[in-house]
Image 1: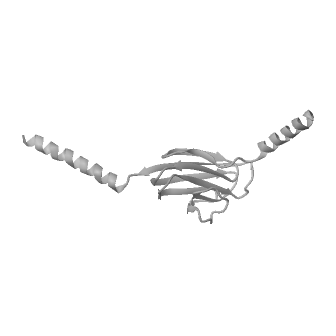
Image 2: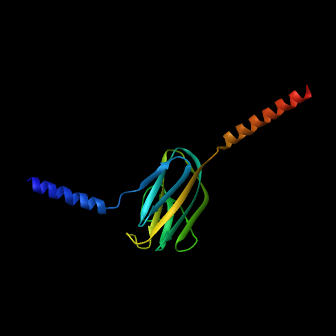
Image 3: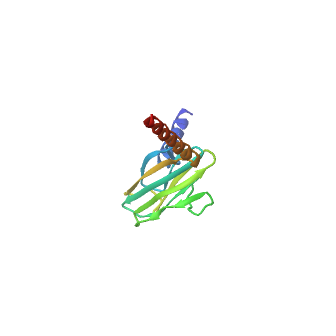
Length: 161
């Protein structure tokens, strides 16, 4: 009985080592994130409510990338209803996303989905960078400008005395 349990445990461990893990969390909130892999993958950043601006690049060595896109859930089809935008294809091995703003009303996981031409382990790899910046709300900008204006008025009053 002990031999059967040991054999079963070893078989499960071996199978788990060959299975691809699910999406990988890069982080939480604004920042600069990097990722790399050699087969169809997804990474995500958890963001709170607010407006964010994104830019990203993904490039591969050894194979072509079929498509790269942003979505609110991990999927293998860039035409699902949870997609936000597709990356621009600069070449078969390079994709980019330049300053794309999105507003979320609740906490959201934002995924970068990468679909390779092969979809499985290869001798090549790809790497990418993802930049997330918080965009100030209009009310915050107005308040900041009003504060700067008040400091200017105080400076004028002091210089007249």
